[in-house]
Length: 530
Image 1 (cartoon, helix red, strand yellow):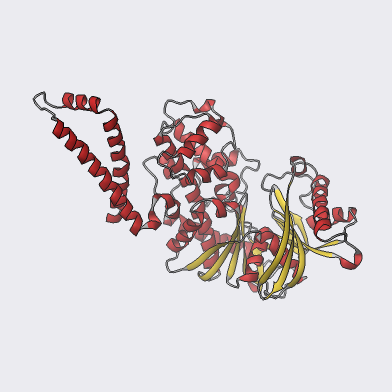
Image 2 (image 1 turned 135 degrees about the horizontal axis):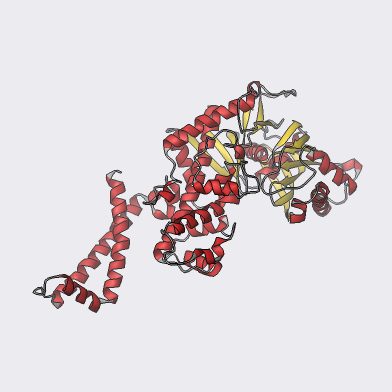
């Protein structure tokens, strides 16, 4: 630790400790004087002047600490506690929290393992890999595509239908969109339940923004389907397995484009599903339409995945012809670690996996996606409580906090944004939602738990991104387009990712940018190319 780190740490500690001392000192001066007299020799007399000088001295220390703290913030704003998620995590003395503090050596090993599995997936040479490296049969856009096109974006419990106007020259025009929530009976029922519901929503949207369809004016629709698919052509692909909590029967092993088309036809809609697109592929295409330096599309939301453009001659396992220099590859990186034991997992991660609907699958996703971050924080908090670090004297097992999935990722973000002196937002949430009274120390540690979980997720995500960019030799002037609530809404996530990439590859110039609606817009843009 250098002198600046030591100065900062000492200043912060002094500020909090001295404020507490001064507050207690003033409130119970009489008791304090009595205890001071009992602590020293009876011959010592504390005079009023000495007492007043003590108060002034303590006040001066507090003010001095605050001034030092303020000066540090002025000259080093990027390192203030309110932006702590923007720097590598340095947890306190508990080994339970230190499990989440990843070293540079651990991340470098992950890069090596990730690139190895990418190569195996591209070549299908018989090696073991958890990365599917699926062929999209889509190339990067030119930016010259024009017209009005539709897209259906199915990526989780909610899906969107949208209409997008393309103006050419890398410019997007007006768009219309509508979001629908998939009922549980469709997510966990049969194929007809799911696709009939989706077709009905598409019908309502098209009637509102286009009017009735007819054979002379068939609508082209791009279908973003954000689940593992074995894609055999641009508009055909069979579902490999469900993720993100879906268990709909009768879909795995079937062509999802054919299922959607069948249910659209049943409603006498003249809509042609011209492209099957993964959400990460769509995100890359959408951002690439306006930024030619876009090399990756990444999803960091309820689920997670990434896609990148690979030279076609490197795709040794390609069985169907593709006549463009590069094809976008859907990595399906959420499964990283499923086959080879390559992830630095904690005791909490193992519990998450065991209690999930898909044990031993999507291990990487379970460490970084919004579906799991809140539950990771909850289980980590319970471990700290069991070891006596948190909620001392309180029986957490009788509270609502003991319930599985009762602590959402949105609350993790809320805790990180609480910069009040007493962490009052955290206090209110823990009392009102879980019936738990907390001390100031408890609340500080709860915030530290949230920070530990989020920082690790950002660093793991950044490491996978760095591995891909290094593999394709694009660590300079590269843009990574990212869609999803984890990246967009969690404080410090973006900065921590970019700092981690620079930590791993000093001198690199990689920027991450939010790509809202990237998956849907990308599907519409791809439909324009058919």
